[in-house]
Image (cartoon, rainbow, N blue to C red; front, side, top):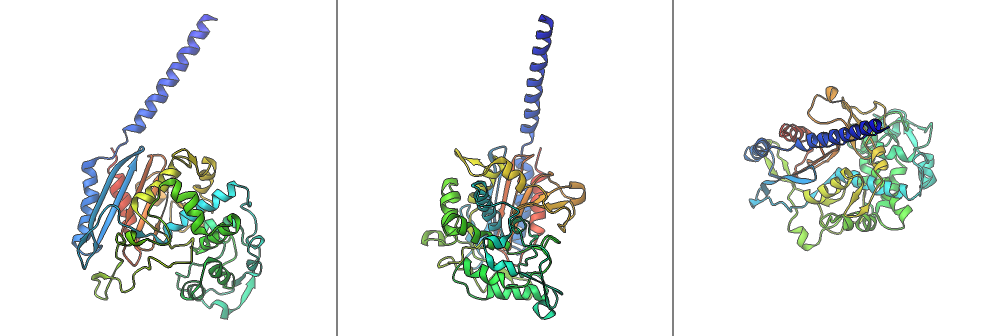
Length: 406
C-alpha cells in the first residue's frame, strides 16, 4: 500500500513537472527584436518607395506588448508623421466586431443559429436567386430552395453578394445598398431583401454584406441601435475609446488621410475622403473607425477566451464555434476555411505560408489587417489607409512576424 502511494505521488510530481516544462517551452517562443527590424525595414521601404503613405503595427505576444511602431506619414501632402494613436477607417474589420456582438445575443437566448432569417426580418421570406448572375434580374429569378439561415450570414454562405464582383447581380447590389442613400441600417437591409441572390443559400461561399443584416438583427434583439449596443456592451467595457461610427472633434484630428494611386501608379491623396461625422447607417459590413490599440484589445479579449478585465463577453465555447471551419471546403483559398466572422487557417501545407493552424483573421478594404493565433498566444494588427485593397501586405505581415519568433 505504501509503495503504491509513493508510486502515485511520483507519477503526479512527474506530470506536474512535464506540464511546467511544456509551459516553459511555450513561453520560450518570443519575438526577436532584431528580427522584427526586418518587418519595420519592409514597411519603411514601402513608404520610401511611395507604395504606402504610412502604417501602424502592433503585436501582443504571451500577454505582453511585443512590438509597436508607427512608420511614415498620416498625410503625404502635409508630411505629418504617423503616430501610434492614429485613427483608421477599418472597413470590413467591422465584420468581426458585429459578429461578436451578434453571438453575445445568441448566448442570451434570443435565437438559434439554424433559424430562418425571415422569422425576424419577414422581407427575406420571398428571396429570389438569379438564374444567371451575369445577367442579374434581367436573366430571370427563381425561388430559394431553402431559406436563408442565421448561421449562413456569418459564414458568407447565404447566397448574398457584397457588390464587389463583376456580375450584374453584384452591380445591382452595389447600386441598391451603397450607391442609393439610406437613412439607417433598417433602410439598407430592407433594400437588400429586394435584391437578387447570387446563388442558392448554403451552396457556395461568396463574400457578402450579410453582416449588415447582423447589425439590423442586433437592433431587433437588443432594442438599441447597433452603435449603442457596441458602445455599451463592447467598446466601453473593453476600453476601446477611439472606436465607433462617428468621431468627435479631437478624434478627427487623428484621422489618417486615405491615399490611392493616379493613372501612372503614383500614390496621391484620394479625391474622396471618409466622412467622420454625421453617419447614421450603423452597418456591420463596414463603417467603424478604430486604432491599432483599440482593435488589439478586441483581439486580446477573443484570445483570452472571451474575458477581459473581469467581464466575460463571450464563452470560450462560443469562440470555439466561431473560429472553426464552418463551410466544409467551400472557401476559395487553399489551406483556409471560414467560421463565423473570421477566416481560419486549417492546413499550413496547403496554404503555403508561415503561421499556425487555428489562427483566425480578416482585413479591411483600405489595407488594414489583423490575425489572432491561439497557439502562439499572439495578436497582430497592421493599419494603413490605402485604396484599393491588396492582400500583399497581409501576406508580408505574417511572413515578417512569424519569422521573428525564436
